[in-house]
Length: 198
Length: 158
Image (cartoon, rainbow over all chains, first blue to last red):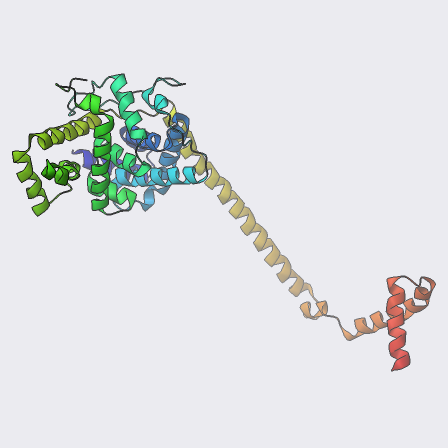
């Protein structure tokens, strides 16, 4: 069974009240949603609360999801709306807090999500490099940061991100290009390392 | 070098796949002849690879427990709401039954019209006002006195 079919099956089961199926959907998508929210609100506690809110709202609204295969994008849209409300209400911390993201801040280090392989360094990015990446991300605009996190870290397609953000795919392409340019400059010491071993 | 300046701002767009058709071909033509821009493209690609290698962060342990508790609550809320709805419906039925019983028990079957002021009631009120007039004079600053004055001046002046 392909991953998409699995997700559809879980969504249909969850929609009929199967909490176990919904828990499996949570396990599958929690890291993506948490990382996306964290990249926007930059506070671990707020991000954890909003991740909870996202899944609770998803559970309550599952009947309104027309395409079960579009679950991930739909979940991101819910998260995105919650983040917007949070920022509007002024409850989200807006100051840069990369130490919290890198795990050497005022709380326990965030667990790294297990990846199913397929990335160039096989998850061997050091804590220092991770901190540098998040610091560089912090300097981008929220829109550019969201596009980068969804595209590069979550491997979402440009069209999927465009649907989440409610803009044209060309706009997402443009954000990705501008963000790549800015990050290339900020991460110059790392990306210019001769063999790329980090 | 002048050509590099012209292409510099397009390299990131080229790398992320934002350039199509003629615009893409022109960048590719330039890259064949320009080692500096090729190096820049390589650096932009490495940046993308670095981002892709940066792992997602897990939500804190215990997040699912909180979610599962919260998604179990609406069921109780619905039950409570249903109970409230049943109570409200029962009360409405009881009120309707009382009104019906009132109509049925009324001797001439004209219950509701009795709520309006009937001519005998008007006469009773007029008599009551007249009866209050002498008492009102005893308390000149009272409302009754004011009513009495108005009543008497109407009668005197016509």
